[in-house]
Image (cartoon, rainbow, N blue to C red; front, side):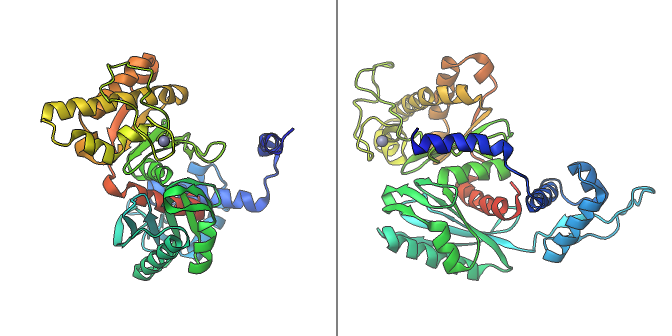
Length: 392
Ligand SMILES: [Zn+2]
C-alpha cells in the first residue's frame, strides 16, 4: 500500500474513534456559546443553556471566562423583567477587537482592510504588487499587514489572508504560480513576524466563507464562483468549507470548456485558446475578465449579449454535474456585473436546468454576490473568527 493510501485509511479510521479530550470539549462548548451570541445577539445565561443544550453551570463558567477575556459584556437587566425568567443578557463585545484581512486575488494590487466583528470595513489600505514575486511578494504583504495592524483602533484578534492558488489547512501556499509561491508557509511566517494568529486560505474559499457568513446564503449548499484575472470557486456544504483531497476543491478554472471536437452550439466561441496552465480551452480562457472584455470589444449591444450568452452556456455545461453531484441550493457569482449579470448568468442557469433533473435545478438560485468587491475580505475575516473563536 502506498503511503498516501495508508494515511487516507488512517484518516478515515481516526476521525470517529479519536478521543475527545476535556480541553477540546471546553473549546467546543465555548465556540457554541460564541456562535449563538454572534448569530442571534445578546442572551441570558439561562437562554444560552437552553439554546446550546449545555448545563447552566457550564454556561455560567464559560461566560465567566469570556467576560474575563473581554470578549463578551453584561448588558444590564432586561426591561420586561418577567418573573421566573431573570438574568442579565450577555452580548458579544463588538468593540472588543478588530480583524485584519487581506485579499490577494488581484494581480495588480494587494487589498487590505480592518474589519469589525460584524464584517464592516473600518479602514482600508492597499499596496501595488509591481511585479513582485516569491519572497519579495511575501515581504510586501507583511509590510501591508503591519500597516493595517497599526491602523486598527482596538486589539487585533488575528489576520486573515485570501491567496490565489492551492493552500493547505495550515496556511502553507502549496502552489500559486502567478506569485511564484511553492510550499510557502505564509501563515507561519507572517504569524511569527506579526506576533498574531494568521490564517490563510484560497481566495475563492474565503469568498465562499464571506458569502456564507455575511452574504445571506441559505446554508443549503453553496458554490461561490470568483471571476477575475482567473476563475475559481469555493464550496460550502453542511456549514463547512469543502477542502478536497489535495486542498484544491473548487478548481473549476482549468476544466476544459471549449473542445476541438465538439460543436454543441455551432462553436460560437471559436477554436480553443491556449491557457496559462499549458493546455487549451480551459473555462478560464473564455470566462476570465480579460477574455470576456476582448470578446465583446467593439461589438454592438446585441452581438455582445450573444457572445456573453455563449460564454454563460459553457459555464452552465461545466457547472451542471457539480450542481448535480452536490445538490447545491445556490451558485453565487462574484466579479464585474456588467459582464456577468445578464445574458451570461441567464444562459448559465438555462444550461444547468437543461442538463440536470428538475429536482436538482428547479429551485437552484444562480445570483450575483451581495458583498460586492469585499466578499474575499469579509471571508478572510471569517477565517480569523472561525480559527480563533470557532464562529462562522
Ligand atoms: Zn488551464
